View 1: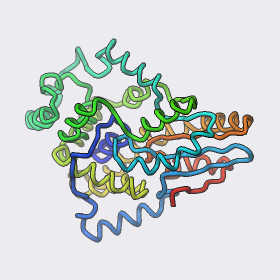
View 2: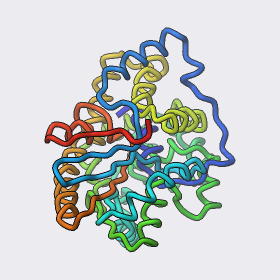
View 3: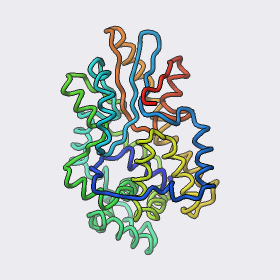
View 4: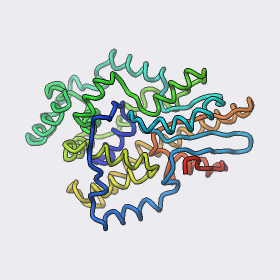
Length: 337
């Protein structure tokens, strides 16, 4: 996987600090007009590329779907106002990982450090070139993590850490935990006594990377390094797109940025983006349809609906949740446009 995929994952699927003190530049605005036009063209081809809040209905069954941003931001308050009524009348809330799954993950990490650390294999200094390790050491220490500790970390975890800027890491420590839209939803559900169900097991994140070859693991780090010094700019760029409900622009920005700055041939960029999309989104989307449909149909028997919140990049596309539901006969209505 290449750098844009990692930044998208870090910003839309990783634990999240508050961003109030972190200021970056919108990199799309700084791209040449020709590149922006090509991004516009690519985005326009993707089904359901705009919109964060949707209603899906089939017969008596109904669900409200919201694309989330896993980092804290005061602008979430507006979306929470829209979600209060449907959540109050919902039979259940569905999220990627609920409180029970988060607790299981934390317990597992404490009980088995090898989930994040490789205790016996070659270290990262041994797997990377001297120059690459020097750059990685500097970047990871900027984020408050000793290089000697990072040397034994799993490459996928190091790559995600590189996607979070030093400023954001400091904010995480100050905030004491995540605070994205997913967390706000689960907290509101708790106050309303609405059950929370996870769409996937707690250990999904580990299985996502289990089949990568050593070379692919190392390429994850190499792909993340060039932009690690500009993580605030990446955060600003993707956050601006998210709160403009311009969801798929997040992905296509990553693609075109890689064309310009990764040093890889365009065909290689496309191959790696396709791999990342398949592994991180498409397969998971397909896995989520059955529990969503079953939950909505069970809720309909009670005269209720369900609410589901998950990373916004899971909504658009031919293999996105919205298109998969439409393929099964669900009628879709955008609620935030």
